[in-house]
Length: 446
Ligand code: NDP
Ligand code: 2IT
Image 1 (tube, rainbow, N blue to C red):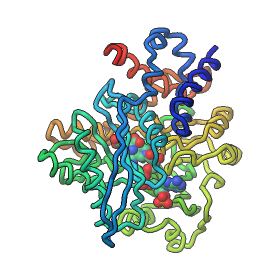
Image 2: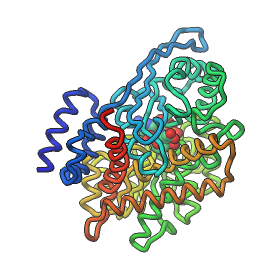
Image 3: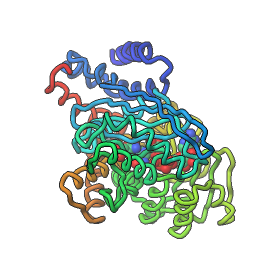
């Protein structure tokens, strides 16, 4: 019964959204977890909730022309997917990367709906971005691009409508340029973006939040096995915002982080990336905007060109780079080498084959929409502080973030327990769905 309905549902999704393979993948994962639950609760089926959730409320696509440093005209494409506003204003990051297209942003916006629901905060789901590549661009070019991007986006967003933030290629620098242009066009100082600078409405701990949250979630998963992060060998992919603060928190918890990576390859440092080495990475990536292989030259360790970290022996793996960066063979290698826990800082980093391997091996598998929800949760806390015109201390924000990650873990247990095993994927998908679905039922056919 259930499998047949999933196939039927997916046929329609694929026919309606041709070529959007990441979107199909994200919808399939959720539909597969949810269908038995929906069959048991016909009110959702009758109201076509799943069909409605998979259709964005609104998709914006626009031209972003700008002048580069040579005075040449460049043309990029901008997007904002306003996916679901049943439980709050659209909320989700902006990604600037040459691979960005409609299907990738729709998958990210779809994931965001469930993730934001799990945070317990009142945020709907959205995502946006552009095929602009910030790599190799001057600060001036990045500013010109951001100003042009916001010159269209500003008419669609607002603190009670749609609140963008960062994602791949969008960090503090870009949020600053985007905020400056929004303020200039609207003549309003509001919390329209999150991830803002400390002096102009940003929340403490927002830069750290995704990475920290991924570790708080891993810790909760390990607790169910009477285990902790102390003494664990950890592999991390990526070397951007999420990877950096995942490294910091893992180290603070007593683990040894032995890898970081970027699109060119992996650095393997068996001695561990301690506080001092991490300070070098932060300067390298966030200020000099250099490549991670420079770490290997600096600290005399191995650089594995073109490789991902999953062949390295570890206890805990934290994929923190991008979608589908762990394939079936990577997952097999991780399990074979004794990995007991995967906590995803990135969005959908594990392919369907990899997820199958993790679930069959019954290791602790914390999927992105639960494990990386700390970032958007702290964005929600930034929105609260902006509305209150107050700012909370580091300790206050960190404590709230920690509490939210514990609550997300509890929701996964509630809906994902299967005898002696917790299927976090099923748990997160159902828990995220219920709140949005019930809100949609309350609000009628809209
Ligand atoms: P950054 O831009 O700061 O860093 C991205 C890192 O991932 C870089 O090291 C980059 O390497 C690597 N990477 C990106 N694309 C690829 C690719 N196609 N192949 C190999 N490596 C790649 O982004 P974030 O750290 O913010 O985001 C990382 C992941 O976490 C994404 O999946 C994002 O959606 C997710 N996420 C982010 C949140 C946030 O608050 N920032 C919140 C929740 C999830 P290179 O420099 O070579 O491109
Ligand atoms: O994927 C994500 O959750 C993010 N990029 C953060 C979104 C946000 O609004 O803080």
